[in-house]
Length: 362
Image 1 (cartoon, rainbow, N blue to C red):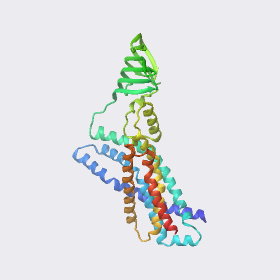
Image 2: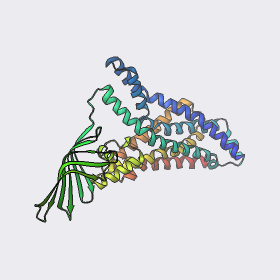
Image 3: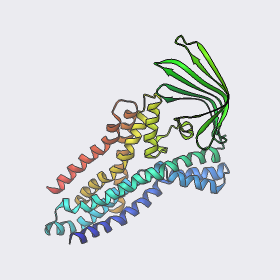
Image 4: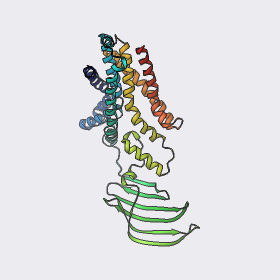
């Protein structure tokens, strides 16, 4: 009997959820579509390029809120329909409690949470990156650079790396210098005017020198070389993406490694990245929170229609997003711990949902 009930509720939730995904996509597409028309008509950009940019735009940051909104809408519609048709009363008369009734709702929302996390980790970062590239280099025709100049990184605890110029396309560099310290005193430098990086991440230094310093900071020995090979702790990808600013354009493990790398290089203010890391788990969990709220509100609302629930979902998520953005700024500024800045909206809405559930139960 219970398995039949679970399947019935699952099936009832799935239809409104899919409807919500398409509905919210259409709502969010209004502003990007206006930009598309402007690019095609006013700026004479190729329609296929504009269409690709539009698709990446819709799969980037706008995609993140679609799933929580759709979960809230589906639970409002489903539980509201059960209540309107007196199915909730029939279930309670059969000895089924409200907590047992919403168990499949929680399981359904947990599955959507996993889907949300996977989407945020596998689709959204790639879409954000491609959307930015298409806009800069194919729509706005900005010049594209494949080189980086004046790179300064911590190579190890007592080693620092400086590169005057590096080309990531042909894997060649100009003027590399490694600084070695012993008890915070410069002990050695390794320098070369040019070189290249092979496929095995080995750095080939040409016509360089190694300078040894005494305790007074004076050079007491110089070794010259024509060809010298070294392996750096920083990979070529790490050097290229060291100053990558948008944490939302990184996968979970990329962001985790980014924080570790920046910490290794002596960067002290990592709040922006830590907050983003916690939000990559907090945002998917919001699906479960909104499922609880939607189940409780849907059960007590018998006369609300689909479009009313659609509007209610938008308003609820808007409040959540404003609160999330406000607390995120506090977390980035260091006025609040990153984990609290990321998870406090979920906590607030969870207690609101728990309050509604208590009202329904009583």
